[in-house]
Structures are given as structure tokens and as C-alpha cells.
Image 1: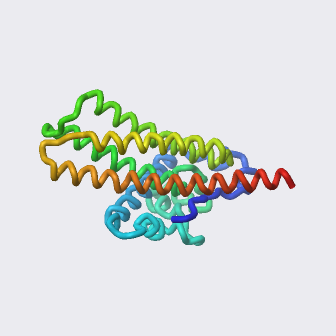
Image 2 (image 1 turned 45 degrees about the vertical axis):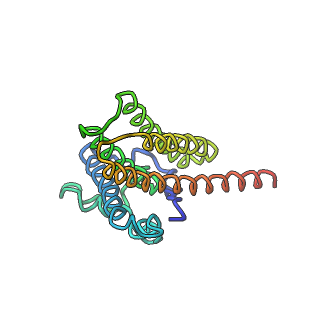
Image 3 (image 1 turned 180 degrees about the vertical axis):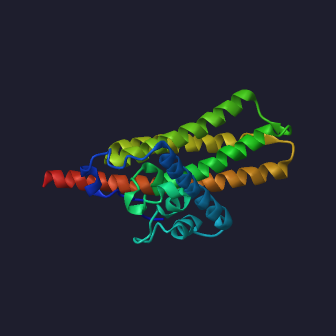
Length: 227
């Protein structure tokens, strides 16, 4: 998972945004397809998370390292007969298909559901204010990385870096808070925190890679402007 540059076809930007003219029903099918992307990634990730380089292997199994792979195949399967005329070539480009978006959505989905399950446990010793603070940190970490993906899509690499830094700061806050929670069952608590850390560390690794690519693009643009 060394290259998350999921570029839209530049020629498509010359076309009118109304050319797709999808109905609400068709867009609903499309969104269901993107949900399947995240669910598929999470399923693959959970099955290999204990292996070395599991993040890269999960990306490979998703097909993101293959130039010929189409990330819109699942959409066509989910379309009704009335929508069958919409093949992959007609599918619009949206950020929902960006690999960083898919990975972030999948891993944060796991983190949020795990945290929800934990706080419902009567044996968990956590104050309401601590619960709110950790939930808020999870939310801010996710929303900032999604904003960075939007900035990447617009080519605003400096802005993307700023949002990634915000996400990394929230991620560190989340890690710190997980280390302070208590539970009556220490074995359960250790297992819970271990699982959270695996995913948080993978998110941090991913974002640092993306930030490195952004810095490279910023430097390349500066050198180009100087020439």
C-alpha cells in the first residue's frame, strides 16, 4: 500500500457534471456498492491483521496495486435491471472510491463499534466526560482525514497536510485515552486495547505515507514554479 493516488480521469472534468443524470435510486445503489468496498476491506483486514505488512497485503487483495483493476465492479452487480445500462464506464468518480477513504471508513467503523460495545459493558469503569472526550476524538480524527482526501482531490496538497496533522494529533489523543480506561476484567481490557491499537497504528502509518506524498508534490510544484 505504497501508492494511494487514486486519480480521476482528467478528461471527465471537461464534461458537464449533469451528463451522468443518475436518479436517486441509482445513487443509492452506488452508495451501497461503496459500503461494500469498506466492508470487504475490513473483512480482508481482520483476517490478516496479525501478519507482517498486513496493511499492504490487504491493499493488494483489494486490487489497488493492479492498474487494470476496476473499483466499480461491485456497483454493476448491485444495480437493478432498470439500471443495467449503467456500466463501469458510466460510473462517476467520487471520493467514496478513494482507497484512503475506504481504509479510513473501514477502520474507524471498527473502532467506533468496538468503543460502543465497550461502554455498554456494565463492568467498564469510565466517566461520562471521558466517554464523550474519546468519542469526540474518534470523530475529529476521522472527519479531518476525510477533509484531507477532499483537499487531495482538488490538488490542495498543503491543505491536505494540515488536515492530516490534525488527524494525527487526534489519533494520539485517542491512544492516550485508551490507555487510561479501566475495566473489571484486566484480560478483557488488555485484549480490547490491543485490538484498538493495531488499527490506530495502521491509520497513523497510512496517513504518514499520504502526508509524505503530499510533501513531495508540494516540493515538485515549487521546483516547477522556480523553473
